[in-house]
Length: 423
Image (cartoon, rainbow, N blue to C red; front, side, top):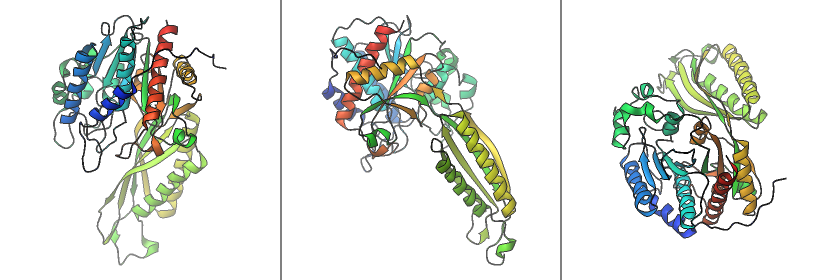
C-alpha cells in the first residue's frame, strides 16, 4: 500500500500554463490544418528556442545555458552543480504534428519550477529544466538527438556523417545555427551520477488512459524497438502473358508476409508490429513485381515476447518463400532494448497521483522518449497524461484543460517528493 500523504500546499497556475501552451502553439502553426511544423533546424524551431530562453531568463530568472548539442537548460542555481533534479521534454514536432507532444512536457516543467520559486520553497536539490534538441525523427535521420549525445550514444564522429536528406545541409551547420557548438559535441556528454533524478511528462500517445477515463499514469518501462528491412526477390515478367503457375510475384509474397506480421499481434497482445514503408520494382502497371522491399517496426517491453515474435516471423518467411518460389532477405536495422524506469521515481509519481486523488496506474510506453536515454545517466521515470482518443503526431492531438491541470499538479508534487526523499 502506498503511504498516504498530507494534502498539497502549493498549486500550479493553470491559466498561465494554458496561455503559454496557446502561445507556443503559434510557432510553426499550419493555419490550414491546425498542425504544427516545428522540425529540427526549422525557423519555427529557432523561434521557439528564442521564446523559451526569453521567458526563462527575463520572467522566471533562471540561469539559461545552451550546451554543445543545443539542448536548452534553465537552472535554479548553477548549471549541473551539486546533483540537480532535472526535468523537461522536447519542443520540436513531426511534420504537421500536434500542439501537445513534447511541448506540454516543457511547459509543465516551466510551470512547476516557477511555482516552486513563487512560493519560496527551499529545495534540498538544485532544480533544472531542459528542452531537448531534435527528439522527433527528422530529415537528418536521427531521433532523440539531444539526449543521445548527453548519454554518449551519439558522438561528434556520428554527427559529422549526418546531413539533411532533402537539402544536403549538414547537421553540424544546423547545430551551430541553433546555438550549439558542433566542434565541441563530445563535451556535452554527461557522467552518470551528475544528476539526482530525471522526470519527463508526456501525452500518452495511446488510448489506455482515455478508455479508462483517467488523467495520469506512471510509466514503468519504455518499449524496446526492433526494426528490419525485408527484401522479397521474385521475378519480373509480362503482366498479360505469364500464367499464375509461372509467376513469382514479389509483391504478392510480400503482401502475404505483411498479413502474417499483422497476425503476430493477435497471438501476442503485448507486441506491436508494423509495416511502415514499401517499395516495388520495377513499379510498372504492366509488369509483375520482381522485387518488394519493406520495413517492419516491432515494439515490446518484454524480451521473451520479442523472441517469440521473431520466431513466428522466421517460420512464416520460410513458408511463404518456399510456397511462392521467392527469396526473402532480412536485414537488421535497429535492435534497441527496452528501458525500465526507476522504482523510486515511479513510486513518487504514484504517491503524487494519490495526493491529487487520482488512481495509481502504471503503463508501458510504446513510443520512444528522451527519458530512455536519460535513464542511462540517472534515476528516471515518466508521467503520462491522457491523450484524447489516443491521437498523436497529427493535428487532432488533444489533451483537455482539466487533464492538463491534474498532470501539472501531480508533476509538481512528484518533484517535491523526490526533492524531499532522494539523497
